[in-house]
Image 1: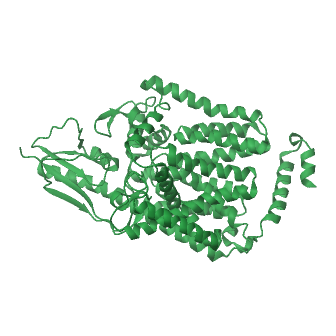
Image 2: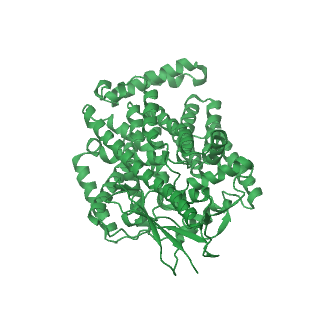
Image 3: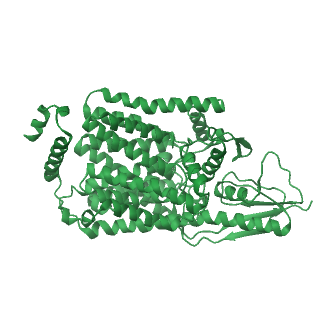
Length: 581
């Protein structure tokens, strides 16, 4: 009766307080029928001031990694930020040696400059140290978790669970300890969705306009953010069942992207948006792998990066489902290990049983995550379930078949959706939810995520330490230090005054000391000569995010088919060469 009555009264004639009260009463009535879980049966939801607790928990997880060395593509964002300080209107107007030769930054950098502008603002004001910049990037991390909580509160009765499930994923924690664009993009993505939902529900233009601006900023932080336009358009059409004046607000991010394209074309001769597709096609032609291989690798990355979907399987699915999905994951893992499907890189020979077991578990977690979205939509068929399934499946398809590589950073946007789906499924269990049955797996997820992040931090720190020791040895030997290799190692070598080798123009002299890292990208091989010394850095954490001989490739599947790997780790080696003639 209440629902029929609200339909007959024009929405615009109601006061905001009345509409909010009616909506809450309707939601309470619906939840009382669909959600048999009592609030007291799940202790996480009874904590006082949950937003403050979640913000504090996020800080507690990230504080141990404030001193983490800059890693992988952090270097590109930092270079652009430092250039922006001197040339605010020309973020990519300089050359870098990132591949075999010096190239314009506008050709190398495949991300928009939004994050670099944020770095420039912080760096110019507070300095460029690792601690300062990582502390600044805790802001978007906290904003992400709080947005998951807010969105979870609108879609489920267990919003704290949803936020904790997102926080305890390796995909989120590893990404949050970088200064790249991914977590900043995700924060803008989530708040844009929240503003849009409020604007659509209340038919208020200011919220829709705010969402349009946030969508544009999201896309200018990472290009994937532009996919919010079709996602929210489809969601709104499903919800409203008709077109409406609200569609006009999508013109805001479209106009922002068109302006960015014209602005960058004026600066660099070609718009940076239009330069993406040729790069993706080139990389895909250069790499191996098949569609089936990409599908399985993406499934593995989803399972490893959204770990609660794996460790909560006993609470999420029936025993029959576990048996069937386990058999499917086992067969897929055997096919990948045995080389029956084409992968970017072959599965490693070392520790095949140990790594194959992890691969099978990750595949099982990936199946669980995808089926959470599909089953939720199949059961509910409402606007929320449509948004979530389109969000998850769209991100999966982009990562597997459209992006230049499969990596944990591309999986990150689906982490909040998977976390909310976990909360939605658990609240519908016919039996009351045991506190231990939920919190113990989540605590296990947190420990594993922190462990993986610590392993990634140790790898990053080894490159910084190596750069310091190489520079000290060059001073001791009165040699000029040259190097090959990129990522964070290149940032610190440049910081200490070394010179990157341009592969097409070698000019070594007896005055040069050359260092070559073994575990790095775009390697250079010296055919004539043996290293006179090798710097060795033991890796003690037993987990790595980037090691081709262990199948770990969190930052690119071109280094491995799993996001991370637990195994006895080999040392990190840096070979030193010198030429007396």
